[in-house]
Length: 283
Length: 257
Image 1 (tube, rainbow over the protein chains, first blue to last red):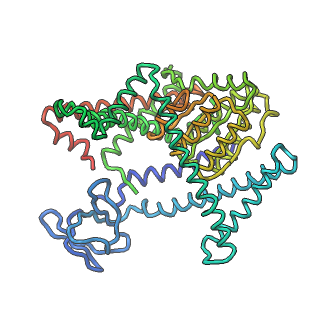
Image 2: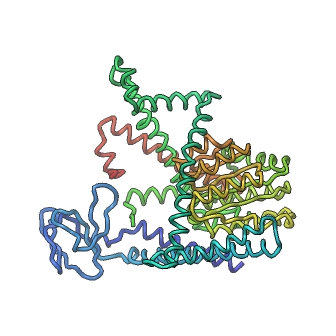
Image 3: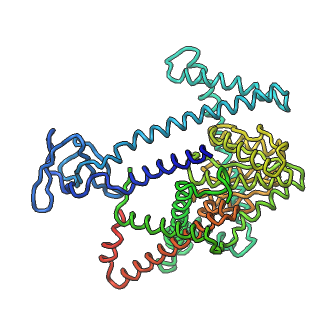
């Protein structure tokens, strides 16, 4: 019981930190100054803020956010500022200061998880060998590969020598070509999947087939040639563009709205330990 | 890091309030109804098929990280699939690219088998971390499908380009396949190579749909109210722009950059 409560408390506190870090402005709003940078010296930044020119001292806990062409403002250091940049400068609310450390903590946790995975594999394969399970000899290969992988990892930074050679054999001569081979299978799989998709079995499949054909032909010179006599808006390239950028975008945005709301709902359930089912109690 | 502006803050507070209100209303006994999701309804059918054929079922929780919502939702589906397998006495194999999933999946499957009184059917070696690289994992999983002659495949979670590498071998072996992902670009591949596909937010709703718990159903209904709210705002914005009040609408909801 205490374990579950502890997990709930830690989850809530961690979620609360991320939530506050997201919603609380990084600088104290009423003490912040916004404007266009006039010049930057090692001790201060001069800004054109509305009609007046203001100087902001570069103290230790001052944060600078530069407006971007798109997206939210980015945090920058004074030395990367240039005249004409639009910035907001103000004292830190401290919440964002710790985000790097918190993220590093999670990286450490996930690295520990790799150790757990390795232990799990070790147990699984050693049990298979001990019990002489079917295909137990495959487990011996696992241990050989693990040792080879460790040596190869050690040799990744070496200039020469047998560890470097092991690295080359494992990664460059075995894993990379094997990966490329598997990846190339995708082309054939796509062809067979497309063949199945283009079989007209229902009204939806007919619709999909028709739009796929229009987009496919519309992207080629043949599509332009085929419909050159028609008005501009009815030519295949225009119709293909409409399907791709209007009809398709609408559907995708609808999906995104749903997914984002779903993510908020799931996030809330986890944050407040309201989740039920796997790894949680049932009601 | 990104920070919320005032409009986003208001939206988060309103949506959170709606979801929590619906959760607590459902807990208080208010009846909640959600539509049927065919992909999730067919899970029991797929497990039944594996049972009839006397072959194992295969579950793959995607290639995402453990903290991804898609992966967490997939583990919710795993619990249900494992429960059904335990109920019908069918063997379940889980393959993953994430070592951290192994102990979690082991725990979920073991609990499911034990809760149905079939603890003896659980085999820890059936929860397999095969490879960390997506393509190697896909290859190893495809090999497993051929060797074990798995009859039903479940692919739930986040997927990358390996989605087709996982599902096409299943098509070849004639297995019944159900997939669910929130990765937009992988959805067409799943649709063409699987019997049923759970799309986008339906994956997040999976736990709620399968457990039928009032807390979970409440959150789904709250989410739908959030959708209605957003659609209303979009409609109002479109009307405002059409009537020439675009500047006012932009002032209220903020400019998209």
